Length: 136
Image (cartoon, rainbow, N blue to C red; front, side, top):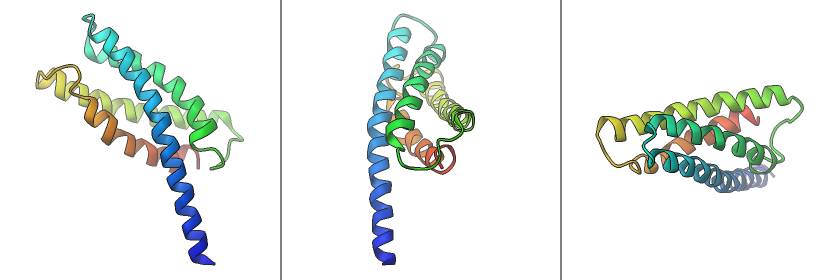
């Protein structure tokens, strides 16, 4: 019986991670799209990332709360959940701003250089924070 519950728990986690990856991919496309459009037109890369981030937060909250983490945790207090989502989004923002600063500004790499850590490292941290704290 315990093994069955553990297996079911893993399947739920895998499902959430899969939905999170798809939703995060959509939010990342929004973020990167806005960033690319603005940075390619000469807007400061960190300012361009900020605009992309703002657009992605809106998309991310709506889809994560309704689909990625459906059936997980409570949705009884929008201010609590939404506030926590904003805090986690700011952690994500700070991490991604760091990648942009480090790779584009500090090392002088092309404007696409932050994409690998932005798409691989930051999302794992943010998934964990969303699952354990925002949508608990």
